Image (cartoon, rainbow, N blue to C red):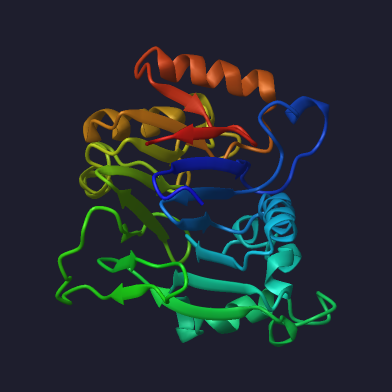
Length: 307
């Protein structure tokens, strides 16, 4: 992998549940999954159904080159639309795969590794986690943590809030973690991935505040790319017939407010509602661009180059 690359590719951009069909073919119907190729590393954010075609691509590369598979997988939270593709992620079944998983501390004290096992535990899936041949390191992470990636062949360096972080050159990958509390019921992890002075922030499944989420603004300050939840149109959020306040998702206006306050260079709207077809999404982004011109819709299969 090109060590000077910093590329964000969207493999799943939908929230809730997959929506295949002719009305979603342009922007995609798979649930959330984002691939980041940065330096010598491959990062995967969330394991919605978008991780399934990503896995096929990784396998094709493996068979073409014979190189082992190295990846760091960051889970924002454990809701179904962010984990439902994991059992079908084929690289987990290869002994040549080396996978670092990071996920949230869960309610009621269940270890994150046990949760991953439940996602594919029989009888809901033919094989269990213990039957996968890949080498795995599964850790919990949370607010204030720092994850440093140096060599893909080595385990990530994981520092908790309050730990002394060593000085690092700018050609290593640094992942900062924050925790948003406004998504039922365990909140959401935000990730900021930085490399050679560039950064991307993932803030899916978050709900805006009056006066903007100041902590998220600080976390995303001056990022090259902010990927932000924008499930609802403005009128939908407070619609009396279906009350959506408190569901843990934002309007496009909330996303724009964060992008402007944080002075990011580009905003990508993600977690598209399964009720919104391609034409409706284009109407939403047009309204967002009128306020923050450098706004795009996260589109399945498309990439954003940061370096």
